[in-house]
Amino acid sequence: MIANDMIVFQDKLQKKNRGLSCISLLLLALLFSCNNATKESSELTIAAAANMQYALGPITEKFTEKTGITCQLIIGSSGKHTAQILQGAPFDIFVSADMKYPSDLYNKGFTTAPPEIYAYGKLVLWTMINGLALSTGNLNDSSINHIALANPKTAPYGQAAIEVLEKYGLLDSLKNKLVFGESIGQTNQFVYSKSAEIGFTAQSVVLAPEMKGKGKWVLVNDSDYKPISQGAVVIKQSDGNSQQANKFYNFLFSNEAKIILKDFGYSVDE
Image 1: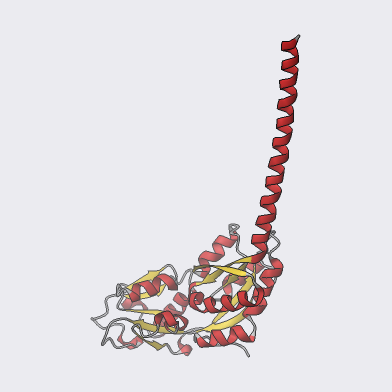
Image 2 (image 1 turned 90 degrees about the horizontal axis):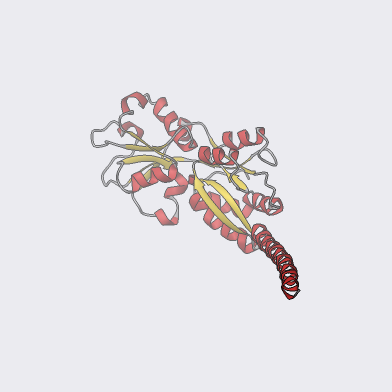
């Protein structure tokens, strides 16, 4: 009889413990959910084209000062970011180097609204080699073995560089010298490390405080390539970040942000 009572008691105790465990797990899940929601509401994940790497630093700093919302920057080529977003990458905002990629995302239903142009980029030739003449006409010189540019299939600044070479009839004669970076960021590494004697990059890169006085550069005539109209969009997400994302999107078009963009060589609509 006592043995039976013990079995019944143990069974009741196990059921009680299982109930308490379920309640504990539920409370932990709710606590994690609340903490996660707090994190999501106070941090934005921004997919940004590599040419905007330096300009977005001070822009996001000012935005955080004003709103308390922090920003995580994911830097890469516009084409690569687009592919990631189409595959479900959890980005809140896409700051592109052109209008094509954000327009594609809008047309496929991945953004909350059509893209708008926040800036116009400018192309430069950049070198770290002393004494090297900087001009498109000098690219065939025997002292230049490698010319760096971003992949034109995924990076708008790379496409602009190809347009320049085509205009001057240099593309075929230089094809064995061209080295392609996945983005402007990797292209900059080729030039900075002198792996390439010269390269096409964004003016915003060479004007960045981090790059001041490093090498020499010259603007490419902007009539030699189509305008680099850079657009931004808010990505559709289900994590409740849309209000915060819209705040940053609006700040990107504010006078404060425009001043910073102009400091980095971009043209902006007044």
